[in-house]
Length: 247
Ligand SMILES: C[S@@+](CC[C@H](N)C(=O)[O-])C[C@H]1O[C@@H](n2cnc3c(N)ncnc32)[C@H](O)[C@@H]1O
Image 1 (tube, helix red, strand yellow):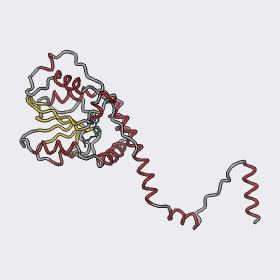
Image 2: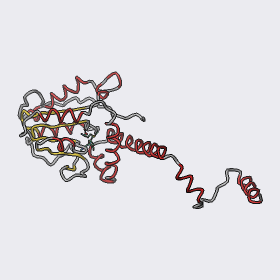
Image 3: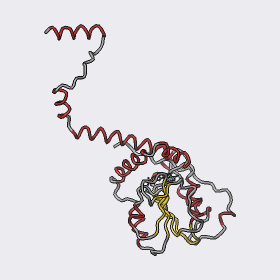
Image 4: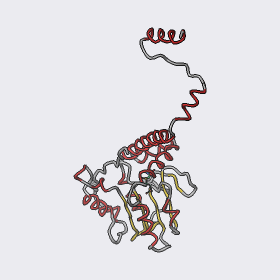
């Protein structure tokens, strides 16, 4: 009785809620154990989902150089990003990386491949071809850590250049220019991108403008040597960020 009165007075004096001392009492322990783990899991998933969306937005709204610095400062963000990305991918009816793997498996085994923005290097793990996997962070000895606008690979050294959902930086055109440098004449450029980024009705780029820009860079069914040095200023459309909705 006396205790409860004391508490009341204390509360009134402070004019707010009483602060309870946190004691490792059996009661506190029991409450903790009783908390539904599904609730905690949901909260954790929400937090990491929010973190993923924040990193994703950063990657779509900065240059490749800035993205490289971002991950250099905090490499663990790369894992946070890819955990969230995998969760997003698991909701898609088809994963573009699997479509590309399927296509590659039908091509010559002698094709050398450059996977720009490889993520967890699924392509290299799925085909027998030689694959150069490139990304901002390398958690795997087979992944080359670099900003893909400036790779350490030789000119005209690859047969297939792949961008699977990786045209993220505001300077995405420089990644495509680098792919042109790496590709052998007659080489393949494969791009898989989110549809909404090419839907002018929802603020996306004009797909025709995008493919014209790719042609002006020098890509067609047969690549012409030296075309890169002759071309005029290319008008690249802006590609809007691909932002994920909260689920
Ligand atoms: C959406 S993930 C796609 C990963 C993989 N291609 C796939 O389809 O599973 C995009 C990847 O591109 C990488 N990336 C973005 N900008 C980059 C840059 N400038 N240089 C290298 N990698 C980059 C990101 O780090 C990320 O791993």
